[in-house]
Length: 126
Image (cartoon, rainbow, N blue to C red; front, top):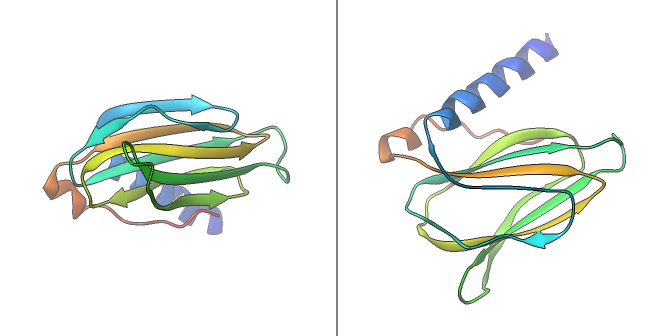
């Protein structure tokens, strides 16, 4: 039953983020600060984390204002393989600071239409 619930949650998350227009996509395995991207409100970060070692992977993502370097906040911290989406309600020019250990990550910055924001259902990582 728990597995069915997880599959349904993943489906809902992918449907909610599926209609969005991808602004930028980032992939990597290490620590980096992404290129600058510009988004209008609302937008989502669709993240995926994989790795070869179940117990040793980690991912930490922080959002920063692109031109000032001001720390906006922590977006994600997880030590588990998985995926999810995070909704943002502020427009701007941003970068993502990524710190990862023994992990492969994919991040998609996706622009939503205002009416799509109502369909967003938050989900916490495992």
